[in-house]
Image 1 (cartoon, one colour):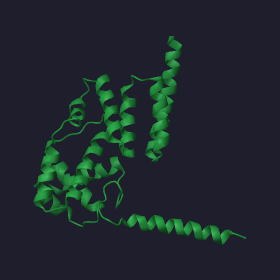
Image 2 (cartoon, one colour):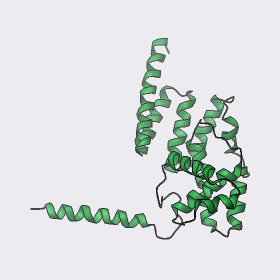
Image 3 (spheres, one colour):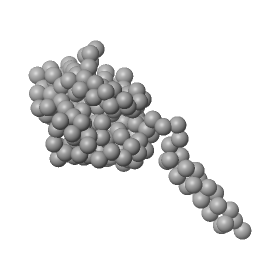
Image 4 (cartoon, one colour):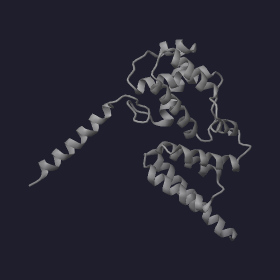
Length: 222
């Protein structure tokens, strides 16, 4: 490949990457995936593109492929400051946050499904933040934030101060990490990804929207 061709490929790949990230922010995940695949065909050794691919795949729920993308990132950037954190995703055992989380939620007699949703949330969060740093000075803070977030998603109204006391941390630290979880994962109430109940209230909203669309279509018929 000539030098000019390499430059052109890099520019095309960068443009595709920007388009992919814009689509990702708007939840146009199939389009984002398509754009990133095209970018990687042009620049297969760009570590940032592999991280972005992992982010998109995680949001799509394809965690196996997301982890493969992160493995490619580690291959290309083995000395990255975030490499130890990403390597932890491939470990067989639980990390310190998961250990505190599962122990505390179990002692609180919470359903296993809710504990599983919190662990799933933690996995997805660590993938979605990509190459951003993740500071874990006290595992109890992140565990409390995960517990609080998954309870709110499932409409379990527990005061933040009560969750903070349960984990022995400050309410403000829990609030800060909860807000980051919500922002990075774009979490909504009753989010299908982490809702564990039999009947999700969002189903009724979808049904109502479909019914309204049908009624409007009939109303406009001549």
